[in-house]
Image (cartoon, rainbow, N blue to C red; front, side, top):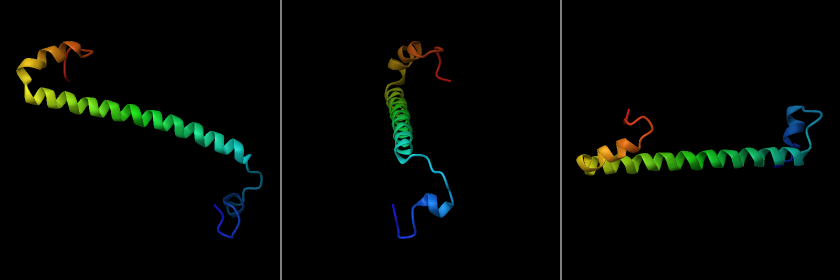
Length: 76
């Protein structure tokens, strides 16, 4: 993005910037990793909401079944 004052490296006084292709590749890699983490976080949050709704609607029927599936057999 140029605004007539030169690129960011020039404005910051960086004399030997890395290859722009390398920077772009690093950015794309970081973006892919972040997207994967965001997707996993969204799935976990949505699963928690569904679990909470199920427990709130019919606690007696499903609580013991869901507790049995939990890693430590408890909701804490």
